[in-house]
Image 1: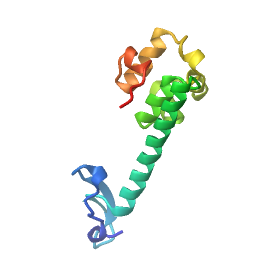
Image 2: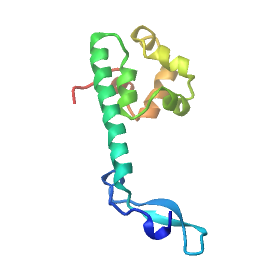
Image 3: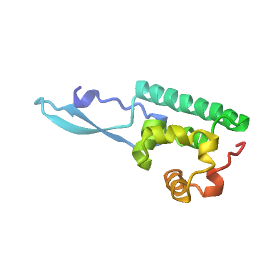
Length: 133
C-alpha cells in the first residue's frame, strides 16, 4: 500500500488515537505512516468484542447455574480466552480449564487466586463473585 492510500477512517475503536502502519513511499521504500483506522478493521474489532461480550454473558449464566467458576466470567469480561490467559498468568492451559470447574476453583490456593487477581486487577472478593452489571 502506498503511503497516500493509508486509510484515515477515524475508527471508533482507536478512541482518537492513531496506529503506526507501514506503507511504501514514492521511491518504493517502506516508511511508517500514522492511520486513524479503517472501516473493515473497525467492523472486525467490533465483531470480536461482541463475541467476547456474549461469551461473558453465557459464562455468567453458567456461574449462576453452578456449572462454571467465576473465573470464566472474568476471563471473557476482560477479553481473554484460555490461551491468552495462560500466557499472561503463567498457568498451563490445562490448569486454567481445571480452574474453570467450580469444585476446583473453590480449593485454589491464595497464591493462585492472587495471580488471577493481578491479571484482572480485582480483589479476591471481586474474583470469587460476579455482579449483575
